[in-house]
Image (cartoon, rainbow, N blue to C red; front, side):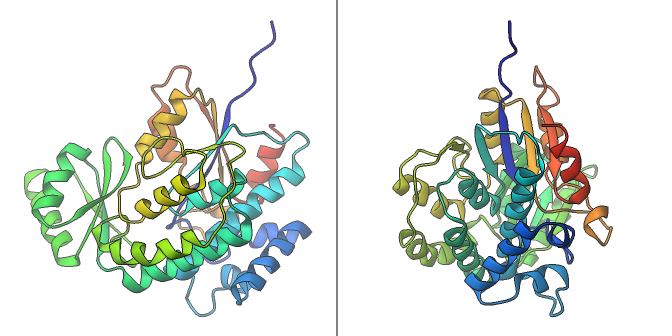
Length: 325
């Protein structure tokens, strides 16, 4: 009896996984990646390679630039992988954390690269311009985090793991929340995140209302593979109107990454492949580690059978992944 085919999902990280130098190794190695970066530059009107690799003006951490930088790197990693692997893995689904959902939609054929790039550039611009507040990751579950957030006028912004809930609010409100946590739960932490606003909370409503017009102006095709929605935690419906509305609501509702991961596991996914981004204190691409790996591995460790994980975030991981297809 032959083995059943592997069920693979391609996943893409969100903000926080950008760094100066991102993509420079792949850009040197692949003409296809150089063409992709030139295409991004032509679409947006600024030098994407210079911004990503050198960041001379310190713009890479500004949301309006971060999001196009990451989407371009996601697609660069995917392009290089498909070119390098003798038998590239074929996904049955795609998912992305926050901004990464747009890369997942490109991978599924629901969005073209040009349209996605314009959308995330506009999304980042609006989030930076109209967003207020800050964010913090709490090492507690949703049931513990919600009353604390409500009490201090903060919103739930993300459900990363059963014991990791992200909240957003005004700086002073987050300070008060952290102080109460330290008093009541000294073993738990409130880790401040570097963002330009309280993303995925009520602080983003003004940005979302304006972004709706941009979503309406873009054509969405029927996805070739299923794509997970941050807003619902389940799979997107196939019609364009539904996809648009989910992306609209995503801006000011929590990223339900727990729901996305559970939906993937329930769907029988047995391999997660992460494309793009990188975190860690090292300076260049070779010193970075994957953004979503820890979350994914921790979530699936009790699943039976336990899904595998594979990163493609730089030249080294690309070469390893290309040889394992």
